[in-house]
Amino acid sequence: MVSQLMALDAGRLQFSDAESCRKWLEALPLTNVSAAQQRLLQQIALLNQSAIAPGDLLSTLETLREAVLFVQGELAAKFSGKAQPLDANESGIWARVQSLWQEYADAYLICRDAHAKGDLRLLTSGALIVARAMCCIGAAMFDHYRVYRQVPAELWKKLNQLYVFAEQSGFARIKIAAGTRDAESELTCSAVYCQALLAHLANPFAMSARQMDFLAAWTEKWSLLTNLSANALPPSAIPALAVDLAGDTGATFAESLSSHPPA
Image 1 (cartoon, rainbow, N blue to C red):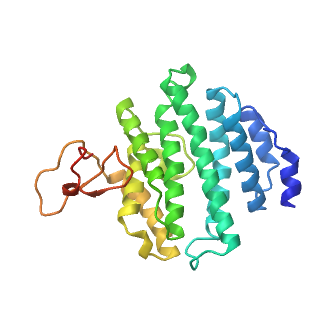
Image 2 (cartoon, one colour):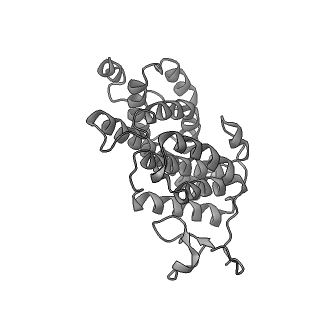
Image 3 (cartoon, rainbow, N blue to C red):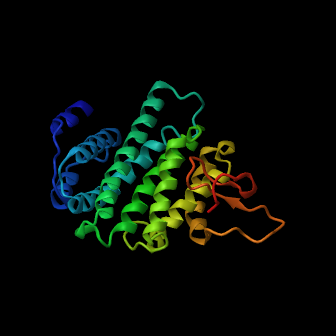
């Protein structure tokens, strides 16, 4: 069945804007989660190779978002908290989930580059674009925790660089109205970044799958209450935490950072 569904797309991009994407999604069999995920992966990879205008690309990515979140969440349940090492089927599902997060993030990064170059259609969309890319990377990180694997340095480097871009562009704390979940009514690039930092600091490798589900929910809420400062905190009995934004790791004790100023 999966191969038949994949053959329907025949390696060709099936839409060119949000409206044609919406029609394609109407025929996507979300009841067959694995097949739907593979088709989404294929189409987003093709989007990244296409010549679609950045403005149309962004609206298309937003149209795809609900379906992507659904299939990724459903498939995560198939490998989350499983005995290690994963069996061949579980490992394959995890790898495909990682691939989709990466392709989806890369698509938003294409929009980010167009925004940075002054694309008029994306002039006011910088915060949304960067937050979405950071959400994809953060989700890929959390799915590493679900299978008790260390987050690759490359993912931390990308996330840190995106936060720096948001800060330098002046929209790190601008609220994003678009979203399908209640918490996202106040989503900011800063909050997305803090959510990833908090999840890492919570030592998820010692948690069960159920505890990690609670962690994901609570860090989303706590991130809205967390502040980041470019200046050193005043002396306190509580050790300060800091991030080397030029580095490839998450937060650590501020006193251990010496080569770069903390954030």
